[in-house]
Length: 442
Image (cartoon, rainbow, N blue to C red):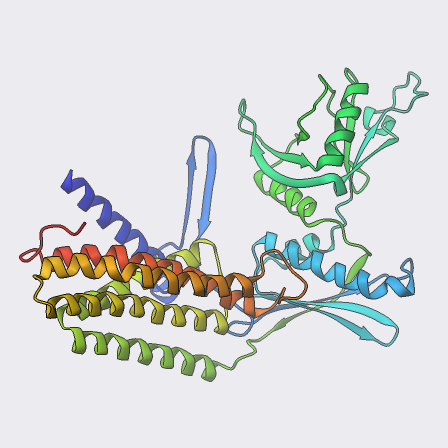
């Protein structure tokens, strides 16, 4: 059993090292940065390249002009702000984070500036941002007559059920043939409407339309009471994903059109970026040297734990993937301090117990036991602050956009990882390095 555990740990370590290798090393030695394979008929494709933000790498700047002809003057600001929020949600669903989105007034024109960090497929992003995504459900009219007109053209009666009534949309796969499909979950009002629609249309078609284009026209087999539905069709996985994005993000409150597109360089110069990386590296080395100098072998264990912490954190950043900005890097470096703090609390407790005359193995057990409460409280406090800064519920009185969210997310990931490495990994390393003094720490 021990050999299998050793093999498993070695494989995990190799995967971490492979994912975390810098891109220039992978390029030089032609090491792939992505996986692409099939599991039970499902294609698994994942890219592990580092995503950098506008301040570190630059990206693309898109300017959209809003059509305000049908918007009342008193509703204009709300409509523009709502459009900005919808675009931000769509971009993040698309997998691009840390965008900078602003409303701009130029003369009598109102525009939305969208700066996207380091993406290559601009056309796909542009299409997704400008999509209106008006989902409607239609049925046959009451006075329907026999005709050879295609069935989707006969579905002209609005049911009152629209995308507004959808609480969630997800990509699903048919259990029979594995084909991608789009699952819909209605809110309470939508579930009641959908139940009534299916009840009166048993044996008849009901059409689902996106922006007046038919997606599917299934025949209702039975009344559906659980408030859920499935959109089927000749979808690829990417098509199904795009549709769920458009549905989940909601409809734009006013039409927009692209009027300008350009590439932008990093907002921070290359010299400033190098200085920041240099400062972070020097700081980390100083911390490692201090821990080794002050705590000896325990300090070396803490330093090794920090390196493992760095590998795990960077793996998580690439796996999400998280767009790294300078504030995000600052959050990561701050979490390193939290990881060191955990080790210091544990080691000081161990030294305190040894000063009381306890043997090393007893001192280690008591040290971990006594320090864990303080470590837990400190980390919960920091995670609470990160939650407030990230503002996942989009409370209006807290920051909703911008780089502060990147800082909060990297801090939260770093703190969570440091809690794991500072307690679990450090404990295992002490068992290994002090096996002559201690058999097992419980």
